[in-house]
Image 1: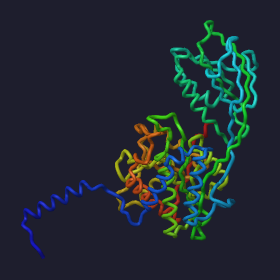
Image 2: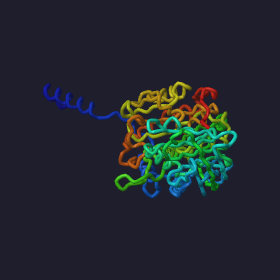
Image 3: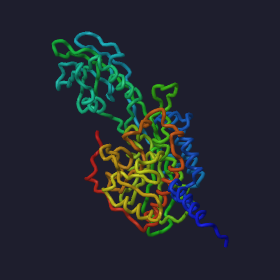
Length: 451
């Protein structure tokens, strides 16, 4: 055995200690999810070719077809009742075909009017019974308190908006210009109208409105695959791994870039679903049936998860791992993620138990004021009693790339993202094996969806 002087040995130990401090903690790579798969899928979904994966648009269709090909590559099973990996369902979109507005006997040009309606015909006057509610937003007032009623009217509404608020007017017009897809063909029985004009001097708002809308049916599609359970005693029980693959499409150009690629939101989560499907397929030891689903239309109302939830028996779903924006390190540092609604079941505690001995840890949602539990597809299943939680790392209060054209692959930390996905796979071991069953969420404790 070779001997070294004491000072050399001490220096070597000191150097090793420094290196150990600098080396980041990472979840062991073996066995883990494929880093190559993670990178390939997220880059494909966030490519310019898919044009932001907007629901009902060509880029969204291409994304669904690509995900189907990934499930086909793995030779996964199909969801009961389907003959392909695509779960196709209809949504409906109303567009304004004609609109005539008079305010205090003066015609208003179409550029100064926004109509939000799913009714085929409108014919309003200020003399109607019951009366149409009118709101005047003056120069010193704010439009924000009325936004919910404009977007989702609960009664017929006319808003006269002072021209000093033109920027707000344009934002509303931009949002509604993308079309309001909905699952219900009949749509909202109420409509809202915003007129950009000064308030009448006498405070009296007299109007006449005549309009027509057209209805278009749009095909949307979830992408679903199944890995049947291997244990007859548990095969009828399902564990869901999900993410939404849609994003917001094309925005006004910023520095020549108009595509909101949605690399983190939520190509990162969708890549996780594909990588986990591959991971569990290779392990081939799942007692419970695993369902891997990429939801459509989360960004415009969670339509994909709503439709999907109607095609399953909620009592058979023992857990839902919904993965939402995991592309950048969490506020707790590398090898961490948080779970929304942590306190609503023992889901998170079970996952952490299975990670004992690894440097990874799950934390409760650090942003309760953001209501993240309700802002993703997990909420739909939670309302049915499923222990359905979202896993995320996004620092949402300070995330300047969220819903922007700068949410690109280059902004992601792919090694950390792969470590997060690996940790999800490992943490699910007890649930997948039928050895752990999270407590159910009380449906009445989950607020209903807003109309």
